[in-house]
Length: 522
Image (cartoon, rainbow, N blue to C red; front, side, top):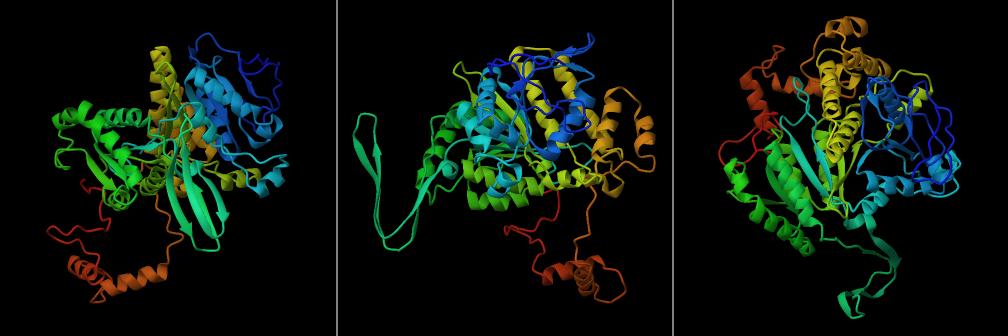
């Protein structure tokens, strides 16, 4: 394989040896590379940026690329950037700048999870300088508007929310870019200076403590209208009820976010939602939720069918909560949406989880692992399909990406899933990738099942790990419910026990807070 000259780099680049048995994509020590060997019968993929990261997720994606993508797709137009810590350090972080520039130019980006090294990791890796998270540079460079996060659903499996939940997290502002310092007692003035030199005192206060933490940040609001259009369009597409989340009752500075969202909704979308009956439970208008209430409702509304939009920090916290209810971050998508000067959307897709360091350590020690690649592959599918949309084809690539999702779901629901879903009988990381590869190659499902897991049966529910459950405490609870001591609990005993524990669902207007069923309505 001969490296090509990258547009983002001025020198011919040398490809280093791969660090795993997978043949692609190889680990590289340079800024970026492209690949050329293709077969004539492969479908041609348009330009896309592929950002590689670290550890177990990178190893898994090497397998996916080698087994699922390489046999079917000519990806010679893709540009690859290595954002591993060692390569960022070696290039003095030029590789990050090149990746951001390429993403802006191409518009469709897939990103593996990356590591932002701690001081300990810096020493372990032999890095010469601290490295910041690449996400901030990407959001700035791509004029980030929102981070879209949706629940992933697999027909035949109940993971958490029965129906889709979508979320828009404002991609800029808030605590993440805060300036701060620690000061003593005195007077603190916050002063704004306009471009014309005029000044305004935003806040002035006396500090009486001997130690005070001072924090300054702002929320840019110019792109809130863009966020609103993205959010309401997606809510209509997926037929879910929209909610805007703020803490504006206390944090008065959050009021403009709500007002801008509401104005866009009322002018452009309200009638469309009314026509679909999506506002029947919100008094026929756009609903606002205080962030405290949103945390409660997310727990209760496990029937799904809703969307939320929030500021940066609230969105970060609330989507983590959604991920935990929907089993894990591996079943949540993550899509950064930005905007080019010509109005075209830049979309970067990644998994919501990290590099899975614990599995990587086990893999390095020669132990079996079972990584579920669903979140990673959903991101790759999203990036591929957005590249098709930007380039107006080819449709066959869009359809092939959809078929990857379908084959993964077939594997999950037919005893060929990873161990997080199928329990101890689940497949290893490598065998799962091979099983899906066989399905993509057109092999019969029964043949694949016999090859990889002949003893398993199709599953209808995820495996529940009971290893951490306090069996003695469970037994004590059961005995307390088993009033007559016959070793079984009747419905009457169960109802009486819930009432004594004050967790029984109540009648009337009093709303219960206990999660009883996945069927909860909005």
